[in-house]
Length: 387
Length: 225
Ligand SMILES: Nc1ncnc2c1ncn2[C@@H]1O[C@H](COP(=O)(O)OP(=O)(O)OP(=O)(O)O)[C@@H](O)[C@H]1O
Ligand SMILES: [Mg+2]
Picture (cartoon, rainbow over the protein chains, first blue to last red):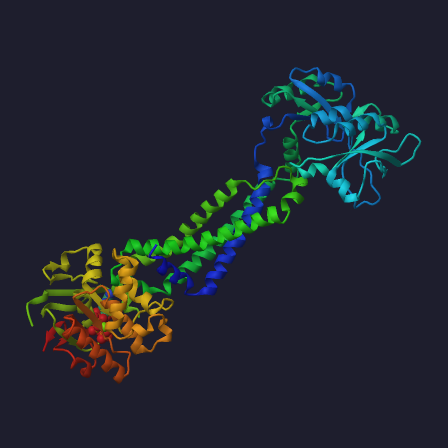
């Protein structure tokens, strides 16, 4: 560590150049951190055994309804614990900007399947027993200042009532929460039985089923069994976890993972040139200093390492700043929350930090090695003559 | 004066330049006794620096022997020469060659980083060397905050700090005015007479050469008096 003086001297020789180089490396790693974390959602294999809930939807498209009769048949499958379902209601509360999902669901079964949603026994029973009942997440209730007992008017858009009326009015009977995933609290659930009876079309159909399994290691088999059960019927199904479906939607946007990796490759190629150029310049203008080191008795191998250390510090410092910034935007700046709904399981995995550091070291070596070898090979007498 | 410290025996140094062989040193012989102060003079291009570099272990002869204190430099590889230099010679250049971003004391400390000395021991040695050249009051100044003479003193302190027996100086006053040059030459004299350093100094300046105990002239690859 006593050699730090020398490395430090090299880095501070032209302070602005060092600052600018570190900044451009930092920007590259900021991009790396953000793009990689989003790309995870597109490129990672989704583990079917990752969730104890399977979603069953129409093979044609997720907006295509399924027959009500499937419900009983799904329940009868070996290894299935409970089955609920949900529907996309659409609709607007007061203003279009007040968007939140509203799902008609079977009150009893839904809260069994989604046992991670916390609701009091009384409010759940009120939901079951109130035909026009509605329960909402706590964050949603706070957003609109709703209290239990409020009447919530929703202007329908997909479903008019049988009498042609577009305005639906629901009674807020419960507020649920999920501290582990606050995004869940932005939804509202409506009593399916009232909805189904009152809607002017589509009666007796169901949007998607949500199947809760006894043992998630059975997912593969159960999913296959479900899809075979309804194969060759007029309503074929497709079964997977929520994660596998969000990945499927995401990949319909295009090969986002590939695009992102291409952008990153271009960025790092540029960074390699920038750092390589900085290092070469820094070493070449220091020829007489290098000659002094060698004259004094510094070994060629020591000189090599000192130059590499210099480029390693440039790259690692840049990487740490860039990744730090990405982490800050991701967690502190709420980027994770705002992207979550769109991309599904977007995540800043520790592996991203690991690969960033690896990339930094690689950049340091590739850009630092040519000047380091130049410095190592430099002959003292030649260098002295150049003065 | 006492026994021979440096023995240059029948040394040839040639360079290949565009198919032609340039003979710079031609069967050169030289004995430098311990505690000598030798000035090397000669026209530009006569090979003064070349000879100096050979005696300082910076370069190896094409043929011939260079023995210093019983070791043969011409038999050593680059790595061995490196470590020999670090403990046996101090170099002083015309343009001081200090690291601009480091303070004077940090510049002087550089050779000691190669030793096993502790931080406080290094500090002691640095202070001793800087006191010896009278620049200890400027230890936290950077080179660009010092005059040419002061910078050369720092460079001399750097050459002295690992307490080598030999000081090798290539035109140490070449970039200084007369008065400052005289001061630096006085300092070299003290180092030679009081500290027992053997000094070999290349110079163009006859006045500077007068500070030395002996003057040798190099011309056409040979030495003359
Ligand atoms: N690496 C080299 N390749 C080719 N020729 C060289 C090399 N080094 C030195 N020479 C030649 O050797 C000769 C002696 O050079 P040297 O530097 O020793 O001269 P000098 O006496 O120190 O001159 P000056 O007074 O100008 O410093 C010169 O002609 C020089 O061009
Ligand atoms: Mg010369």
